[in-house]
Length: 262
Image (cartoon, rainbow, N blue to C red; front, side, top):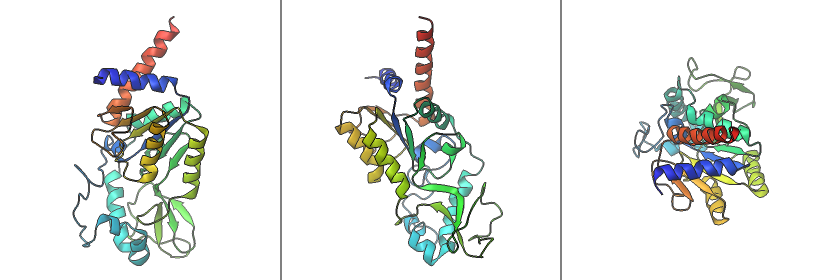
């Protein structure tokens, strides 16, 4: 299949599907100008941080508990790289497609909050949100638009304890509610699974795609690079997310317009 035929096929699958599971990663927000953590254009590549540890160790739950100033140094750097960026056309397209199909779900690894900003329904932010802070002592929370003006590490206005973002750091458990929602979605059945901009490195991200493929459910990967699920999916678009969804929506809209004139 050439790219035009692939896009036609994916648009047709979207047209038929009533329940779509979207799984999104950092590549989706790359079209908003956000860097990924590793790879071409990434913040860290494979080198150590200036504290002499890997980024995974710096952004671990153990480091946050032991030396929060180290974790916060890199959390602040990640947030600063996001500041001023806006959701892109792919975020809006996913929100629209999910909204038009009430049984759908969006499972994102991204902590930038862009899916939430565009009103995405049935959203699971499995890794949390950088803009929601919680006190490690008293548990009180607050939301911030960005980290500008915060002391590092920031203190709780109520008890003086140290705040941390409500994100899943390396070595920490995933939110049980998010996992249960995903399991419930899969148990009820899906018509289409679309993986967008993720390397699918984690089992809970790759698993639903592989499961769907083995069960005969149509699967789509939108990613310019090779990933752990590339060989499993039924349709693979080697494209950026914004370009891909622009083409898909154009086909869906053209088909709806043609049907209306019949």
